[in-house]
Length: 307
Image 1: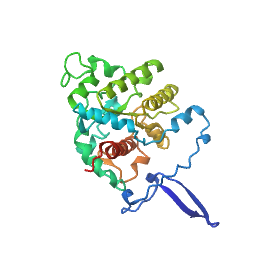
Image 2: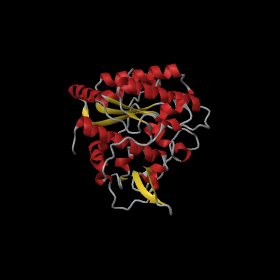
Image 3: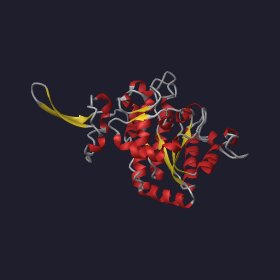
């Protein structure tokens, strides 16, 4: 929220942006009734000492959806894709049952984020489904390897990605690879595979929503994680894709939103709870919020659904 207030005995007027999770917001506050500030935030990237890290902070947390994605969506509709189906592509950070899937399994509390109700109703039935292209240990290489395909859903010789897209016909794919890849792929391999993944998604008329991933500066894979996140940002820009900048969003969380293994995101409870400020403390809650707001943008600007 953009806050203006008078502070101290000098009655100095101060204003700035504050995470809602750090505010004591009255129960009746609803963001659907709060005006939208269209001015640019007052953040200054020059305050970030590293030019490398500036590139990671630069993209907004929530993407602005390009006109090109409308064209992708319309092509997908002609191919028979389901406008209400969104799928997930990634490793254990993506397959986590508390990430979006919990909306139907354990319920949710939106609190001030009441405007997301329509988007949850629109997509939730699809989000509860397991994805053939989201598995523990999966990498940007493995998603193209038939050995990782589930015999439960996939045909012989079919890759996990092709299998998921064939059987679900989604309109949107939430894609995150990196937490596993930093330990097994070099930068060239990672970039090649991510671009192949985007190409395969676009040719099927599916909107690829890329995501950066959180990393801890104390981890051995820190430098590789920074570089991989830079590549994700570059790829999203090259293709004009929606990008969820989870890396930047998680910088303010305790431990960067990561657990003891510096890979998996921290969590609390079973339901998606946005009513208690948990998005300012726990990685999975923040991940759910960023994904839901991004899906809300896509539903309103591309799918044009009012449900």
